Length: 259
Image (cartoon, rainbow, N blue to C red; front, side):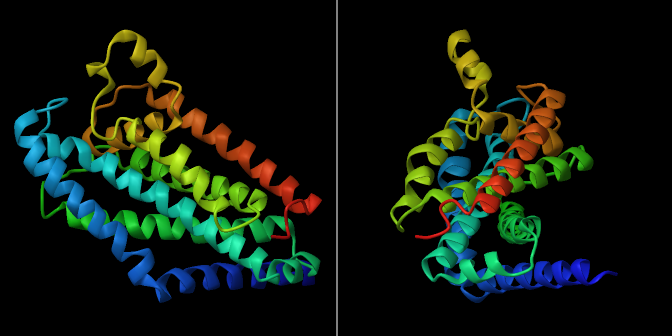
């Protein structure tokens, strides 16, 4: 192994280790709150409201919303981990030392994104385990489930990186999650099937990328979906490639690297 490859490998391991250690060290802030929030969703929406709604898509309402709630936790936590961590590095000026080091921009980006993906998956696993106390789930398409959750976590980790690059203060890192991410998630078919909507709003909903992610994941778990799985996965692959290229260009240009 050449010196350059060894340097980047050590740097990658270090960044990923630091990111994982960071969210594990403060688990009462990173892992516990989403778990409590999801339990409240299970109790209020699944048990209380779900009894009045009845079946949806051939499943109990609780079974129907669980995949969406798992995906929602993965989305918010993978995004939040990267945006907070990278902006924190900017604020503390430690990112400048990393930028001038003999480390590839690809290594820096992959390290931060891997940290976001791992936190998203960790919370997703916790929520999945908790859901077992409320309903029974059986994975119908393991390959689709794994591919979709990894691509979704990667996409929102990259989006969190973009947000962190352009953020100028701590208030800026909460604007996108509050005014963009939350509405898209709640309108992304987490709590309902778009077949319940009028035709016009069904068409409008198709423009929501979160809808494709949630339904693809639901297809992997339950075997039902409101959208084309092939189209959704293709979209996610393209989105991942485009966002990765954008993030690399931002790193190489050095734009927004100072808070």
